[in-house]
Length: 140
Ligand SMILES: CC[C@@H](C(=O)O)C(=O)SCCNC(=O)CCNC(=O)[C@H](O)C(C)(C)COP(=O)(O)OP(=O)(O)OC[C@H]1O[C@@H](n2cnc3c(N)ncnc32)[C@H](O)[C@@H]1OP(=O)(O)O
Ligand SMILES: [Co+2]
Image 1 (cartoon, rainbow, N blue to C red):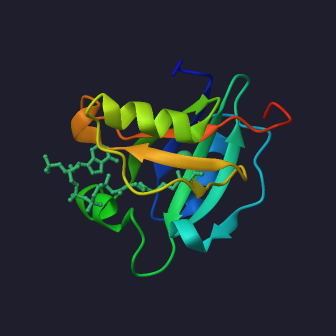
Image 2 (image 1 turned 30 degrees about the vertical axis):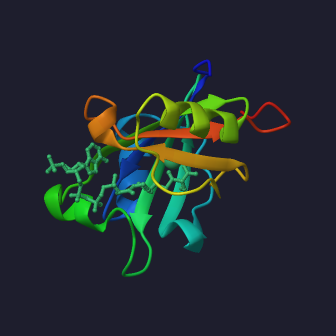
């Protein structure tokens, strides 16, 4: 596997609306996408475009949301994960596991409509890493 483009930085927040205001009014973001629910991933999502990547604002959705514990520990929210693109998600998963890294679950469709996996932060120097298959149209 070769590490690909930084697709997005995931930022957990207790309120997408409040975070949108911060990125728009304090940081000067001009392209902020419409928020949407992603029930299979247990999050509500909003993408904020930057010149070379995206910030992915994620708010808990449902009582089994994977970001609830993170927000309990970080009530203001905070940087939650980084997402790199890969060519083939199944090959990437197999290679991660062969190298001894724990992959959290099976590939699932993520916010960009392509399959994603997560690598446990304990095996990546304390950083939760999302790997995402590059969209067929090349993405943003
Ligand atoms: C929008 C959809 C999709 C996309 O297409 O982009 C997304 O990005 S969805 C994003 C949310 N989904 C996920 O995070 C799924 C994968 N995550 C998990 O499976 C779990 O959250 C976890 C990473 C295994 C953590 O488990 P959890 O039970 O929630 O918390 P613990 O407190 O038990 O954590 C164990 C351990 O890991 C440390 N940790 C937890 N989260 C992070 C983090 N985001 N970054 C770095 N480290 C993290 C936590 O501090 C614990 O450490 P110790 O206390 O030292 O044991
Ligand atoms: Co993500």
